[in-house]
Image (tube, rainbow, N blue to C red; front, side, top):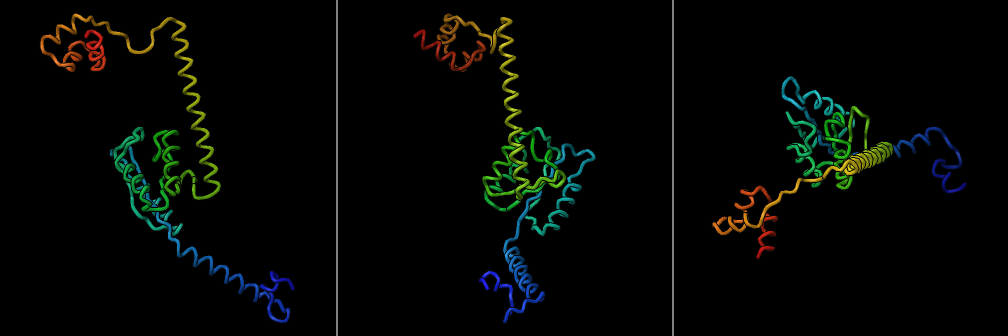
Length: 231
């Protein structure tokens, strides 16, 4: 018999179901032992926009139950209360990303994607940062798990959608600017005409460059440039 067949065959060629079952049990035991050595640490993130009638405990309860089913160890809970999702900078989210960079956990789990990301672009950037840290992302209500091949495929699709959204925004802005130019509209901040006499008079009166800029309603750099031109 070939070597690969002899592994599953008892002595003298007698192959029984019990022998194969014992071999499969050995495989299962090895897999379980390997999994036991790798305990996944998860960080739970929850957010509520207002503190009036909303409480993050509902989100956290589902997240804890999900982590228990997956046999994950909760490394920490990060909660933003009364913080709008339109803000990229949030206290708990900032702490979570900092701890992810330090690899204090292996997975970030949230209730829904809109609880985590401000926009599609912000979500893609945040997930890319987590991926570079070696930290996976799970959204339990959206069935999104970036620790699986299917989840990583979904991430690629989300990234493509973000690029598409960005290109559409750029195209709309460019069309708007072209249309404004065609109508003869002046783009940008309106120019402010300031005579050299005013600058010199204020400078001679002992005013500083910043005081001159404030008095004339122009920038510090413009005052400095005009004074150099005069001198």
